[in-house]
Length: 329
Image 1 (cartoon, rainbow, N blue to C red):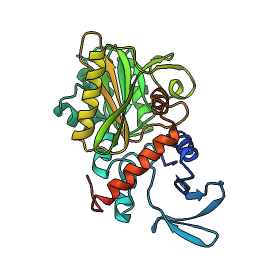
Image 2: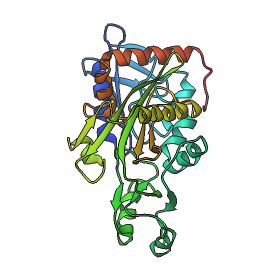
Image 3: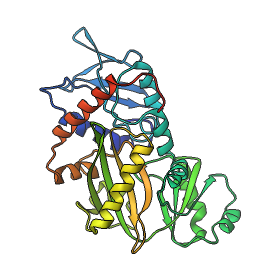
């Protein structure tokens, strides 16, 4: 948990929520925080202990233990972009998230859009720019875009750095905001419709849909404040037709498989009126805070967070037995 990005605080909440839920009758659990100053670790009693990042061991009361599996709750860099996964591959310790290649691909919104569109997903009209672009020349490139538009950092989560603008005169300021997260920026045409999130988990080679949630933000869009300050109504299952639900499920499961994702993921969509669903984003390390979507989808299917962590741990350990380390995909 933790990390180096703006999502540090959210990641700590996700990590601590999962840490509390792990079944102590089955597993000895340790918390590990990664931050810009290094790392620290603690045991189930929240007593600080020694952690060796190279050997992936913890030492408590002069006893050194090698970790058997890792739950990745580091949102953003370095947990969601494949950086940690690449390091963990060299240790041979199985982990809960996707491999380095799929993680890096899906974390970059523009790269991901380019690939999933060829896999059959409908994506928003968009262009990729650098933060140093001349705004006047950019305006001409956006002349055929319908307003409003979204200006987003290509590599960021929790809606950090995203602005929704109704005038091209606001481009300069919105690019400055996005560039605080990433120099690579994607500009998307806004789409009117129902915002939806589909949670997935792969268990015993079967991709299971955890639920489809309808998101109704009290803010102009589903931004950081709406996500974590109670300014959103989330309806699970979503109030959409069975045909629309099936469409969302099929797209999500198909992309999960084609991209060779692992663990639990979340696919975000906009469902326009009388049009196919549009994929907005893929989250390979989605939020697991008390306010997050997937924990609430679990409640809807009467699956406790403890039961969920048991299923996830068993899947991660089994996958670890059946693969060769290190790997990229």
